Image (cartoon, rainbow over all chains, first blue to last red; front, side, top):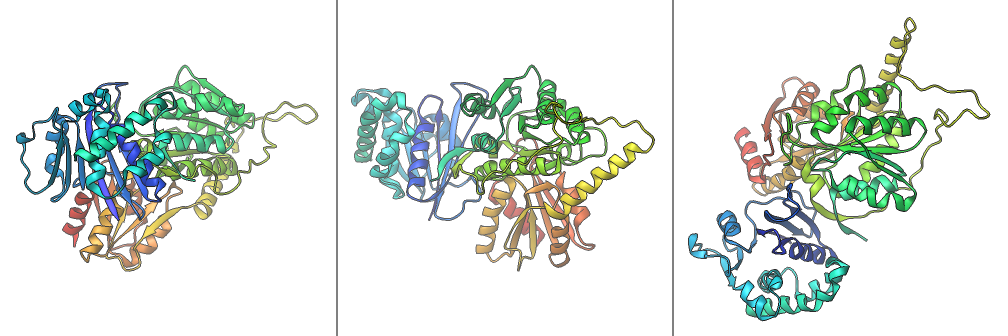
Length: 178
Length: 347
């Protein structure tokens, strides 16, 4: 088994937290994982993108230029990475902030959700990332919602532990919408 | 139990578990996770963390702590490591153990913070003045950031010589599942040479100044014997698919990881490529490369610089072996496809 993904957006959208949930859930299932975040000099703001590779064998390269899936949360992320998504690859796009007509791909599986609006419906706009994560889980067959549930307490910082039920609800909501 | 751990954090935790109780350093990206972690966790084990006023102060504080018999470490990058070079030379000349971490940044000058390997020559072929070598270890995974840091302390004490961890920023910044316990129990050797106060014993002296006629020649030859012993006993490298290889890729750090994926894809296409990954850059696996080069007539050196380890590979190779180079300096990172394309050009 080998599966790689790029998750991208701007700082504050929670790209790193959903990537970490995926990475830790995969480790918990016994897989090898590499998690490569972008890093910069900014303390907050700026671009953020993460490469995650999951495999049942030793992983060589932690970077990939034709990923199996792409989770993009804003237009710049979409325009940057849509070209390199593997044919038949999975696109999860946050349509609230992305116009996918800028670059049309007919050879991929597209899952476009209005993540921001859906998060507001759930009562917290910060849950948009979890909606996208739910859509990824539905379409990728690598991890389940239950796999995420098992590790979410390890990944969400203790001071935010009270948000875990809302986060799980948003993941399930994204899963059902996708 | 394996925990998703950032390379720099694995290294810092490795230092604590190796018995390092003194850290002196000055901040610089992309290694800031190391002092941040140690500032928080060294006090937990009774250690001392000092944010020094400069890198020059850091390395000389290391010299003092080491002379007193402690396991001590500093970490930095690019310009900070350059500032420390006088101290490296004094440590080697005074035969003092120390661990110095260089999470490389792009140079020359202030450069940039993307992954690169431009400091190979500085680390492996000196940097400081005089006839000396650093022991240089090149981790390529988060687990090795932990394990090789413990190894660096062990080798530094064993040979009373500075040991450097030389890693690119991808190895420092990415995360992998890690076992954060030592493979073998850590044993810190007795240090009868240390300056611990001369109560009940004759006074001791640690120095690198030898002005008597012939003294310094004897000292240099003694150091040389030590470096020869390291070359005999401490070389570490990893090989992959070399038994039937038509072409051998030689790479360390991040390029070695990317090369592994390239080799996997090449083999699926019927191309018999293999890998030799130096883990110790000094002592360099010259003998192994020489032996493999007697049979494998094409070698591709891949580095994230303009060709530094390349020269050591060329020196190690058997006559008649062709050595090619693919380099990405200045923060460029090769994709597996790029390495595959280079290999295919050579077939």
